Image 1 (cartoon, one colour):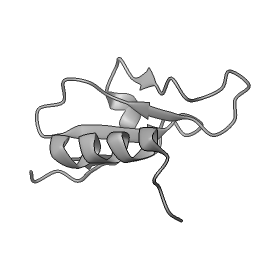
Image 2 (cartoon, rainbow, N blue to C red):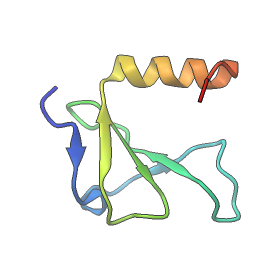
Image 3 (cartoon, one colour):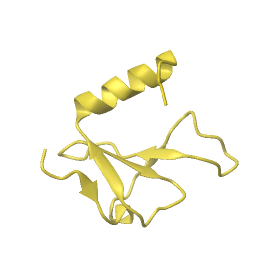
Image 4 (cartoon, rainbow, N blue to C red):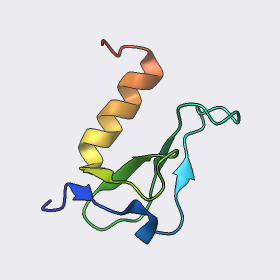
Amino acid sequence: MTDRTILNSAELQGWRKSSYSNSEGGSCVEVFDGYPSGVPVRDSKEPFGPALVFSAASWSAFVVTAKAGDLRF
């Protein structure tokens, strides 16, 4: 994977908001399905901001860990 950042994430149409995000406009994560070089992820409050692109394997591992409640900050 060569692209790790998309500078203007608004260039992609079809972002999907996380099912764990609330509808009150708080902290929301959006992902883009079908991107050829990985899984773009952005902050929904910054639609013209950057998106980080993760490998499919890295994103899957993060989702599994988050769903299990095993994230450590």
